[in-house]
Length: 148
Image (cartoon, rainbow, N blue to C red):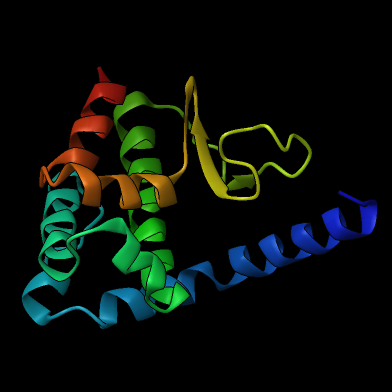
């Protein structure tokens, strides 16, 4: 990747970060009231949003074909919940969202990630993976394992 391309991608990531609160609000506002009222960034809310997602999409290819705001909204909600819960449960101040633009062989290359202590995760891949696993508690199970 050229330095110019890297800088452009980094600038896009910075814009994504600036828009994150508004994207998250739009995502939450788009959900039915009975779901919206339960989205409190708790471990339990991850199961609620995951079950809702599973009721709307049966395969990860479906959500990938939706407008980007849908997958982005789920990813941000999951990522922000992980960050908040891990900070509260582990007394560690989680790093902010990051993006890897230098190592093209990195599993999460060019995708927003969160890093808290030894945990590094890509909420976008968690969202798409939950559609393959169809568990209903995939997000919360991963988060609970990180707390232990």
